[in-house]
Image (cartoon, rainbow, N blue to C red; front, side, top):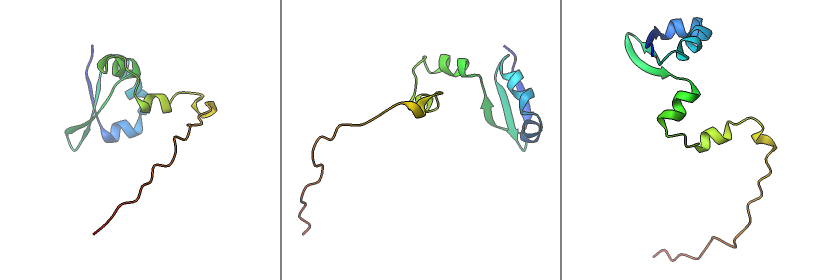
Length: 84
């Protein structure tokens, strides 16, 4: 595994280079010389999180806009509350 460090300015100028480097290992992106972000591949992310899909992963999946979701109503969730 190769660790790469680049500045935010370099990252903004050449995102493709950062993506290529992330295939070989984490890419630390610095702001004013201090590590601020880490770029990793989705495969590495899944390994780190135990392979569990998060709601963010699921919502970012291709074709998600075509999924039909009609939650069933379970009645009224409101109730009277006395304030006094």
